[in-house]
Image (cartoon, rainbow, N blue to C red; front, side):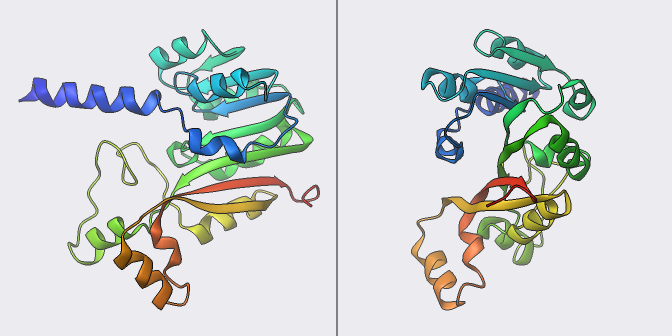
Length: 225
């Protein structure tokens, strides 16, 4: 049984680090020359941007060594290790965009990391992130009706998630770090009619529970337009 469980975990890990995250491509601004992805996995997202000619130079930070080594085959530079330790090694005022595809919630102190990110971005640089929504209806159902908050191998309650966010706390985090959000959009919304009707009948109060994640685009507060 343990062998079967180990194989299952390996498959989950491979799927996680190989995720292309195509749904986040539209949130990357045009005219980007240099980008960096925090938690780049095997480099699929950066490779897509480079193949489309949307970025000239692309860096990655990755804590998972096998994935980081794979990313090095397609990205321009990949640092392997703990992002919160490696961030200080990044050049100042260098990047046009810093991307977090479901990685902020894995950091011990994402608030401090965002503050440091400002020194690594160019003056008009942007942050792009996707962040799991802890108020997703499936998670609320387990919490309210099943009285359960069970960590699993992947998803909102991923065992490796250290932080949990709602739409409102996402706003607070970016604002407190000195960023202004220029776009905040729910992604991977459910098609279940009951949930969509519940959101409608609540006059928007429960609209956020439809979405598995939120996509965020932000600029430094004094540069936002």
